[in-house]
Length: 359
Picture (cartoon, rainbow, N blue to C red):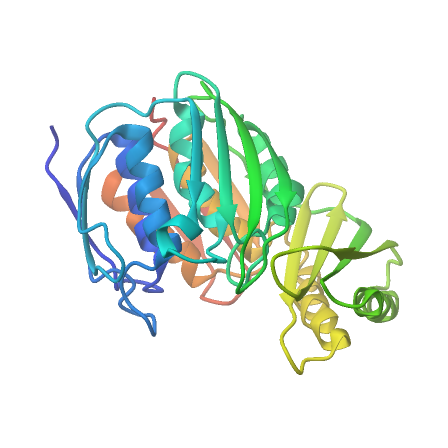
C-alpha cells in the first residue's frame, strides 16, 4: 500500500473543495488520506452536514475505514479497503443533520461521481437535500452544463430532479444514473465558444406568488436584449413550484455554437426579484465578453477528469478561480501529472494538463 497522503484543509480557498477532491482521489487510487484543518477558512470550520454526507458517501462506495467522521470535526482520516463498487446508493444530508437540511446534493454527487464512473458497472444514486442552493452546482447546472461537458470525455450519466430543495429547508431529491467503465477518459481540447445562439432564462418561485418568477425573467430579457449585440434568441421560463419552504432562484443557460455556460442567483428576504435576475445577468455578461468557452464554475470541475484522462487536455476559461487552483493542488498530491495555468486569479486564462490515464 502506498504511503498515506496528508492534505492541509486550510490550503487554497480553505473550504470543502479540498475535502471533496481528496475523498474522490482516495476512492479512485485506493490511497489513504488524512485531511487536517478541515474547512479552516470558513466561519464554521470542520465538517458540516453536507461534508459529512460526502464522507459517508465516499466511504460507502469503497468500504473505507474512517476516523473523525463527525459533525464539526477538523481532522479526518479516510482509508479505502477495496475498489469502488458500483450499485444502488442513497445519501440523505437531512439524516446526518438530524433535521431538514439544504446541504447541496450536487456537492455530494461531485464526491462520488468519478469513482463510480470508473467502476466496473452501472450505478444508481439517489440524493436528498438541497437541489438549488448558493455556492454549489444546482441540478439545472449539472443537467445543462456539466454533464454535456464531461460527455465529451466519455462520461455517460443522467440526472433527474425528483423534488425541489432550497435553502434553508432542503427537502429536495435528485436521481442519478451512471454508466460505468469509462476508463480511460478522453482528453479535451476546448478553446473556442463560437457564436452565442440562445439564452434560456428560468425564474423559479417556490411557495411564492407567480409574479416573482415573471419579474425575474422579464428583467433578464430587458437587460440581455440591450446588452448583447449579437441578438441571440432569449427564452423565458417563469416557474411556480412547491417545496419544503419558500424560495426564489434564477438560472441562465447561455448556449454557444461550441459551448454552454450557466449562472445562478438566489433570492433572500428584502431583495427584489429584479435584483436576483440582475446578479445572474452580470455574471453571464462578464463571461461573454471574454469569448471563453468554459465558465469559471465548470473549469474547476474539469480539473479532475482532465488529470485522469489519457493525454493532453486544454481549456480556456473566463476566470481562473480559487476553487480551480485548490483542486489542482490536491490532485497533484495524488497523481503524477504535468499542469500549467495561464492567467491570474479572477482573470481569463487557460489550463493545460497532461493526464495520468488512471485505470
